[in-house]
Image (cartoon, rainbow, N blue to C red; front, side, top):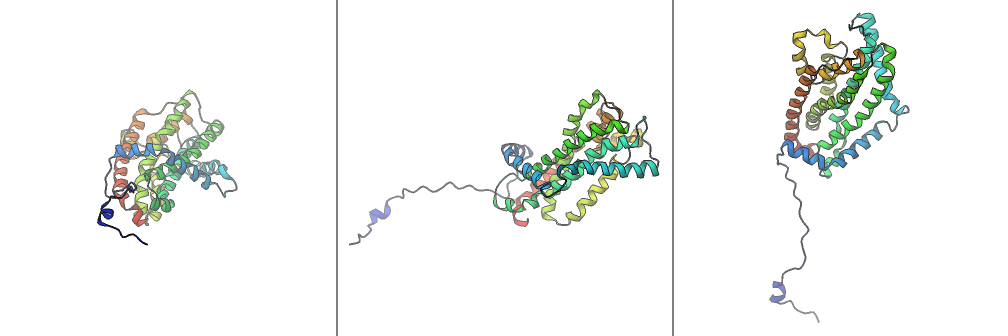
Length: 293
């Protein structure tokens, strides 16, 4: 016979414990410092993105990592024929144009490719962005990390080929690791706002290639920075966050001299300013990523 529940039984408190509730506030504004700390905490996620992007990049390519060698060589050949043989553009300091082009094309290829891929990183990870919480900056930084592999391969190619093109290699090559690290800063600074804008505005698929193409011609890639008048060089390096680094590659590899610290410092300062502004744009647009992606 079924026992009727009494008021005393009903009044007894439940012994079940509710699971903890984790709330993500979409309108929360984080500071740059707190975002950096969170990215460091999720560094394994960033490494996972980097490893997967590297595998997918060359997964179905027959030549694989060989493309990291063929692309800069093709650009150096084209630039040498067009700007040295036809346009008769000289570099000076006894450096052949081919040696100059080789020293700057490889780091510029890293800037262009890393920026292009990192800007679409959030869109490529749209399923993960909608379902899983993680600092969204890690997706962008993971792509930049994977692109560093191509830059490393390119630097090895640069050291192997440059002497045959007339470059003056010497002890100043010790500055190359510093230049490799310094050129990552402007890439991250530009990629963060571009990635956020790419999620909200699909017109970026047309704007981004144009911006990178114009950026190349505005940077000392097809012409040496020595062609810029002396009194404008510091301003030029400040306006272009990669100018000082590219000129540093030219001086270290092709000329055999140390980087121009004043111009390098101006470009690094410019990169820090762009990074601060770019991350502010990223944080402002981040709360609606999962809704619009």
